[in-house]
Every structure is written in structure tokens, then in C-alpha cells.
Amino acid sequence: MISALIHDVVLALWAPFLMGLVASFVMEACLRPRPTYFLKRSLAFNGVHVGSWCLLFGIFSLALQRPWFAVVLALSLTLVVVQSSNTKSRTLKEPFICHDFEYFWDAIRHPRLYVPFFGIGLAIAASTAGALAIAAFWYFELPLVSRASALAVLTPLLILTVAGAFLVVWGLKQCPPPTFAPEADMHAFGLFTSLWLYGVALFRSQPPTSTQAPFNQRPINRRAQPECPHVVLVQSESFFDPRPWCGEIPQEVLSHFDETQAQALQQGALRVPAWGANTVRTECAVLTGLPASAWGARQFNPYHTLARQGLPSLASAFKACGYRTICVHPYHSTFYKRDRVFPNLGFETFIDVSDFTTEDKLGQYTGDLAVARKVGRLLEDDDNRPLFIFVMTMENHGPLHLEAPNEPSAAKLLPAARWPLATHLRDLAVYLKHLSEADTMIEQLKASLTRAPRAGLLAFYGDHVPILPEAYAHFGDPRGETPYMIWSTERKSPVHGSPVDLKAHELGSALFERAVGRGMSSEWNKAAPEPQEQE
Image (cartoon, one colour):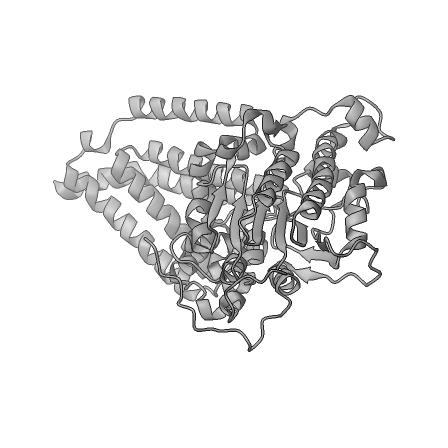
């Protein structure tokens, strides 16, 4: 009797299972850039894919007791990942990886930063269609337990789930390790296998130790000297110089930037580990001095690690020299867990969006000039200690297409363009408006540092290029580097030295050497205790 019931359940399962498996390969082929065709991939890679589908179908069917509903739900989630990957590849030059699953929760908490890139209409339509499909399948499809005993239902589904787990484990053991070049790995392994490989690598990875951090070397003298300058380090959101990339942009857009660059102690191109977003990768590299390779699988969001365990950083090095260390970021301090990360990196004070008002907004976020005024007030409040102020701006953060270009502004910033602007120029015009505000911010920060009783250093760099897919499709992609410069109140004449190109993780050390007057040498004391892990 039981065997006959199991046979009936198997008959009810095989059609949705096979149709779902075929559909999963079809959906994978919709990825852009497209992975290697599954018949050309190794048996291990395909084994992980098939095993993953067995797991999804088995678990969802066990939970829902409706195999066709389980197929629709599993494929819907797969489609969400595929669409997310395509959007991410189009805007950030990087496909979906397993680390990105957390951003679905962030999209709920901070929808403005994520949902518009997928299309608000599409998001609403997909959510509505999903809700209707769930209701329909739940109502019209009879549960398996109504057609057979619990044992007859559990037996084939458990066998299928266990077989899926076996295939995944076997396949992963045969696979080479990921290269952590997401586009190449997705192309070689396929969707399911690359997600598994990145997840396993993340689980097995170890965080960098304090001994690996260049700022583990602490100065022997922890008292600030009278000649120690104030230091303002600005991470300007989506800042790059678009004029070499697009000849339609006038030189005057970045006049203060050009003047400051000409006077800078050091300037050049900064090789940043991000495109369009993922600010924390550049941010972490600058603050910790560690390259992406030191983080391994954790490099895609190192703040998960730093929220639990601190590392010696640029801020802690300045703090050890007697500096007061402050972060100014006009957004929620909890985003990317910065409220937990920055104390672990040696910052004493975190000024976030709650310290600004609605009058400070320009566009979607707090304006750069409001941030400059905040920094100016900090420099006026002298407690006989030099200040290290790390600024992360928000004004130029996308989605840029949520703002409409302004005709007078566009006429000044894109003088050769006709109104109404062509599609590829609309977001660019909005970007240039905010870029000009960043340019003015540079001049205001220089003025504030010049008025301070101490000498001052201003370091300025962009975290990544902006998201401008239509403009890039028309003009071509920029190089992806951003400019940086280190300027001093004590030098006003032009500097005729050659540009010094840096990687992002080298900038903090260069700035510290300029401020303190020494490099990371053997004179430094390494006996300071390591940061303790915080739960």
C-alpha cells in the first residue's frame, strides 16, 4: 500500500521537477554576460547546478506540499537573482555574487538606493504578479498530503533533497577555487556553482590580522606636536574628472579642483576597487591600507568583519599621535554597519545625517556645501588637539535619474547640448550639477583650513565613477580611475612635479607620511595591543 502511494507521489513530482530543472538552465542563459553553455561546462559544475535544483525543489515541496507551486516559487526567486545580476552587471560591471543576498534586506531598509535601478514600475508589477501567483497556486493546487500519507510524501522528497545535497558537495569538491573576479567566475562556473563557491570561500575565509595592517606600526611619541597639522580627508561620492572622457563638458566645471591640483603636494590617478557603487571597498582600502587580496572572499564587503573585529587604521594611527578623530557622513550611521565599524577603526566621533537638517539637502541628499560648513565649524572648535576629519559625501549618490535636469544649469554645464536634452545627457547633466557643488566644496574646505590656527592638509579623492549607463553607451566607458590630491595650507604656488598614481590602499599611508613627517619605518612601536573582538 505504502509503495503504491509513493509511486503516485513520484508521478506527481517528476513533471514539475523536470520542467523546473530545464527552466533553471534557460533562466541562467538569460544572464548578461552569458555564462558558458552548460553542455560545454564540466560535469562537476553541472552537478552543482542540478543538485541545487534538487535542494530547492525538495525543500520547497516539503514545506508547501504543492510541487507546481514550489517550482513557480523557486523559479521566481531564480529570476529575481538573474534580473538583479543583469542590472548589477549593467550598472556596476559586476554580476551577482553570494554576498549580494544581504542587499535584498538593505533594499527594504533603504529602497531609494536600490529599487530605482530596477525600475519602480517593474518592482511593483513583479511584486503584484508574485502575490497573485502565490494566492492562485495555494488555492487551486491540492497539497500532496491530501492525496497520500505523510510517509509516502516524505520519502521521495527526502531522497531527492539528500541526493541534491550529495551532488552539491561532490561537485564543489571537484571545482577549482574561485578567482574572485566575479564576471570571469560567473562565465566559467555558471550561476548556481559560482554562488556556492563564493559562499563556501566566504565561510572558510579568515580575516586579516593586525600584523598585516600597515597602520599596526604606531608612533613612539603619542603626544601631538604643536606643528602637527589638521587633516581633512574627503571621500567625494562618485567623483571623477569627466572632461577627458566627454569633450562636451567645459573646463570651468572643475575650476577649483584644477587650481588645487596645481598647488597640491601630491596628486594623480587613484586605482579604486569599485565601479558605480560598493563605496566601502574603496573606503576600507584607504582607511586600513590593505589591498583586496588581503581580504580574500571578504573583500566584497569587509565591513562585515570590521563590525566585529577592528584593525589598526589611518584613524587609529592619527589617534595614537594625539589627534582627535572624527567622521562626517551625512547618511544613516547604521548603513553598512558603520556605527559599529568606525569605533573599531579608531574614530572617536561619528557625525551622521541626524546632525543635519532638511535645509541642508540639495537634490536627494545632504549637499556637499552643508558638509563643508560642518567641517568648518569643527575646525573652529579648537581644543588644542589637531583634528583628523574623514568626510564621506552623499550629494552625488544615485539614482541620478530620480532628478530632472535643470535647463539653465544644463546650458552652463553642457553648452553644446540642445534642450530638451537627449536621453544620454539627462543623468549626465544632473551629475555635473552636483559635481560642480563638490568643486565648490573644495574651495570652502581650503578656506576653512587656511583660517585655522594650525597648518592644514586637505586630501581629496573619488570613491568610484558614477552610474551613467546611457552616457557610457553613447560616449564609451571611462577608465574607472578617480583623481586624488593632497594639498597643504603652507604651499600656494603651483607644483610642477609629475603625477604620482596610487592604488586606493596606498593613499592613507601617503597622507599620513605628509602629516606626521615620517613613513612606516622601524622607528615605530609595534607593541600596542590588538583590537579586541566585539560581539
